[in-house]
Amino acid sequence: MHSGSDNLDDLDDRVRDIAGLITHITTAAAFADRTVRRDRNPESDTIRLKVTQLTRAVGALGHALADLGEAVGHAGALHQLAASPRSTQRSESIESTRALLHARIESARGRLNITGARLHQAADRLTAPPAPSRSTSPSVTTPHPRPSPAASRTR
Image (cartoon, rainbow, N blue to C red; front, side):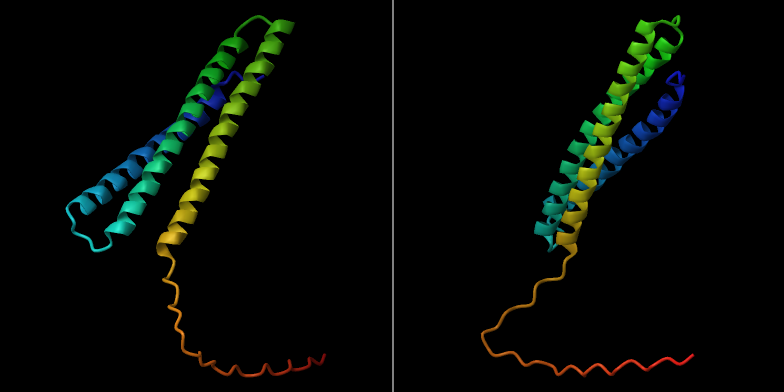
């Protein structure tokens, strides 16, 4: 039976990762915001959108970090339960606490996946090439060469 120590080591790594992301993204958003406020960039609207997307991501990361904080508490409870005398009640408590631990980890994972997908979509919109302008004049089509038949293979 696991004491929760393995979970604590893994959670420690994940908490550090997310805390580092929060710091990194907050710093990037603050830098971009300062750039816009100083009006040094002609693409201010795009930068404002980046700041908005980054700060939304930090909010979601904070929620994921809170989920992991609760998971740490459950891992600590498992650690304590492992040291208690064996009994039916202990086994039930371990199962219940383990389920709570996994629920918090899954919640954090889900939040991170959703946040990553949203950031990815936002980045795609920010870097998408501008749509070609539509003109009212008739378009000229470029002729496409006809595909040639594939050469037959002989063995």
